[in-house]
Length: 178
Image (cartoon, rainbow, N blue to C red; front, top):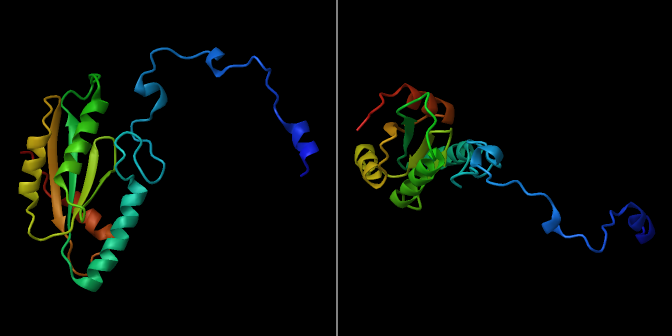
C-alpha cells in the first residue's frame, strides 16, 4: 500500500485528545479483569508459573530425556483447597501467589513447577535423593494459610511410562494431608 491509502484509512484524533480524559473504572477487583485460571499458553496470569500446556510439553520432553539418560523423575501434585467451600475467601489470590512463591523457593533449577488448576499445582523433581514427604513438609513450613487445606500425592517415573500413564497413576495415588 502506498502512504496515501494509509492516510485515508488512519484514525485521526483531535489535537487536544489525551488518554487521561478517557473514563476509568474505579476500584478494579481482580475478579473483574482476571480469570482465576487464565494463562497465555506459557505462563499462568496470576502466579507466572508455567501453564498446563507448557507443563505437559515439558513432561513429554523430560520423559524422552529420561528414557535416553536413565535419570530419575518424581511427579508431585499439590492441592490447596479452601476450608470453607461455599464462603467467599477474601484475597484467595494472595494465598495462591504465596504458595507459588514457596514452591519457587523450594525447587532447584533442574525441577519444574506449574499451576495446573485454580488450586492445583504440579511439580517434576528430577532427582532420586529428594523425598517427596520431606519436600512437602519443607513447602508447608514456607507456606501456611489457615483458610486452606494442603494435600499432595506423588509417584515416580517407571520405565516405559508415557506422560498420560504417569499422570493417571498420580491421580490414583493416595493423597497425604500433613
